Image 1 (cartoon, rainbow over the protein chains, first blue to last red):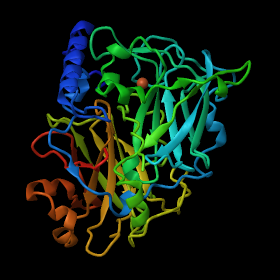
Image 2 (image 1 turned 90 degrees about the vertical axis):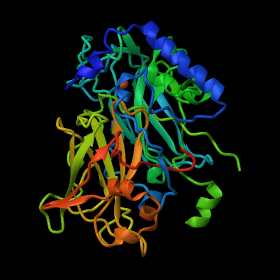
Image 3 (image 1 turned 180 degrees about the vertical axis):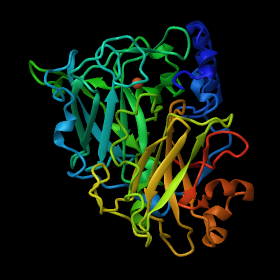
Length: 261
Length: 183
Ligand SMILES: [Fe+2]
C-alpha cells in the first residue's frame, strides 16, 4: 500500500524529464493568458495526481446554509502548549529553533479570529514520525513535528518549532521535496477550508519540485514562501519567519457577504 | 474594495496520519447512541481502486437544521454535538462517521452534509455535498440545476445503519465537486 505499483512505474524517471514536463506546462500557462491562483489538480509531473484529479468541470455553486459557517474550536480543544513543538519531550529537538507566525485573514484583510491552525512537519533531518516514512534519516526522540493553536483576535497564529529538513520521495528518481511545514486552516466559512504547505525563502529545490510547481503562476506560488523576519526572532533563542494566510474560499465580494448575513 | 489573492492549497501528502486524526475525530456522537446514524463510504480513484490515504471532513447542521456553534470537536465530552468530524480512510479506502442526521437549513432545501476531501496526490482540497435520500431531494433547487445522471453522485443511499456515500475522484461516475466563483 505504501508504494503503489503505478508509482513504481515512474520510480526510475529522471529529474531531467520531470523538469521538461514542468517547463512545458509552465510555458503553456504563459501562453494561456489566464490567471491561475490555485494549483492544477491535473499535474502530470506529480505522478500521484494522474488517477486522483477530477476530469469533469467543477460545479459552480454559491455557498449556502451550513457552508457559510465554520466549526467552532475553543480553549477546550487546544492547549496553548501545543503551539510549542520544542517542549513536547524531555529534551529539546535538534535543529534550528525558529518562530513561525503570521495572520489568517479573509480576502478583505479581516482577521479570522479564534480559529484552528494545525501544523505537521519533518524533523531537522527530513524525517517524519510516520510509519510510512521510509527515509533512513534519524528520528529525533524529542520531536513529534505536530502542533496546534488558535488564532488570536488579530487573526495571528504563532508556533515555536525547528526548521524541517528536505526529504527524498518516490515521485521519480532522486526526487527531493523542498523543506516545508504542512498547514491546515479553517476560515469563517467552511468553503475557506485550506490545507497547504509553507516553504522557506531561496530553497534551491523549488525549481525541481512538481508539488510546488503545480501552482503554475509564479506570483501565486511565491505566496507559499515565508519571509525571514528579524522582528519575530527571540534574541539568543530562535530565528523567525512570517507567513500570512489569505482564505478566500468561495466568498462573493465582502460587501455581498455582509448584506447576506 | 481591494481584494487579497488567496493562499494556494497544496496536497495533504502521505504523512498526515500522525497529525490530523485524533481520538474521537469521526464520532460526532457515540456509535449506537439514540438517534445516531453511520455515514460511511469509499474514496475511489480513476481506476476504481480505493484511496487508502485520503481524509474526509464533514460539517453539518443539527437534526433541527440549526447551525451548531459549540466548541469541543477535538476533545469530545460525549454529549455536546459540534457538527464537525474528520475521518482518514482505512486500507480499503473506507471512511466512517457516527453522527446525527442533518436537518434542512431552509424551507425547500434538502438536508446534506458539507464534505471536504483531501488526499495524497490531490493538490487542492475538493468540496462536495452528501445529500440524504428523501422526498426533498426531488425539489431542491441546487440539485435541480444538475444533470440527472450527475445529481445521483451527490445523494447517499440508505443501509441498515445509516447512509453510504462513495467519493469518486475521477471517471464516468465522478462525484460532482463544487467550486465558488473565487476558487
Ligand atoms: Fe511533507
